[in-house]
Length: 352
Image (tube, rainbow, N blue to C red; front, side, top):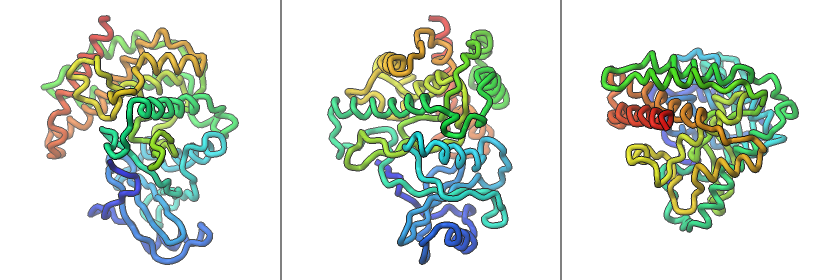
């Protein structure tokens, strides 16, 4: 098990001006005193996350990766704004404390939130939790209820009515991810032109729904209570949140939700403990979602195919770097085959 307080030494080249940062934090956060214990959370392919542990407070600082000038994918104000807006109406987010676009402090915009103490799980459930099928089911229901609750938030009540452009969201997603794939094609992985064309040709019309979408809702993006592991304390990583069709968000999340009757090559890609005894199947999740939201999920095929295709493109973006020698990380060597499996699964779904 990994816990979300397992900060590690700051990676070389990703140090900040701790003196300047400390001075600003003590000016804007009442009662902050002493010297912080500084660490960095693992990861770093997206935004960089640091922990500053003071005697009186435990803080998390988020900034974009070094060398980026992104206006969307690494936008700190976007993350800060959605969490700040959601907190009064959707409490399962960390407390946000401060944001600045003053790049003279640590070299970029950044924001500060209060750390949530709990556990983050990855591929398997911790054996010490001794979660039987009934406990797994309780956790699973809680996990999906949090996404359902998010999709039911009134974006106007959260002050987020202008947070994104819900009209045309599906089209932008399809064309955007198809375009990203075209930029990272390698000769050992199929182009999957038929899948791309099918998605373009079968885009549903704008539903008129204006839900807040997380964009990457997975088990490893939630913090669980150590003592009551079915209780979700907070949802993290809001960097690609948006307003749009909630079924897109659901389809993206279900693409990570493998189950026992999936093809072997698909099950091999499992990144979370969705096949543990007691977990809901995708069909049960869809049924529950429809019952809770009133949104018809009977024609879910497009969203299912798009979800798997999006994961394939994400992995291909990483594999392209490995294939071209931009990274030698051995973990990425098999990503090309994973993309091939996902693309073929998309085609199977289309054909069926």
